[in-house]
Image (tube, rainbow, N blue to C red; front, side, top):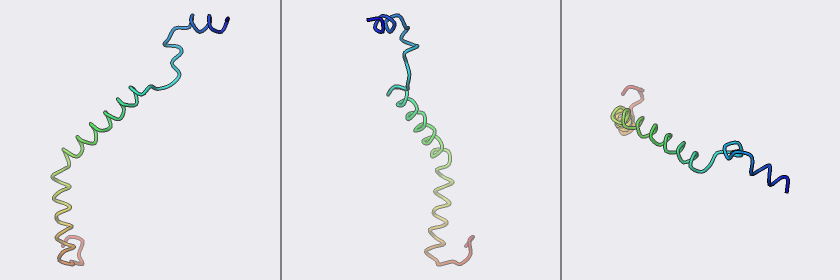
Length: 66
C-alpha cells in the first residue's frame, strides 16, 4: 500500500523512463524529411552521374572519364 501511495504522489513526468512510440515516430518522420530533402537537392546531379556511368559501361570504355 505504501508503494502505491508513493507512486501516486510522484508526478507523471518523473515516472517517464523511456521514449514512447510517438517520439520514435517523430524521429522517423524527421529522418524521412532529411532523406527526401537530400534526394530533392541532389537528384539531378546523381541522375546525370548514373547516366554517364551507364554510357561508359555500355561503351566498355576503359577510362574512368570515358
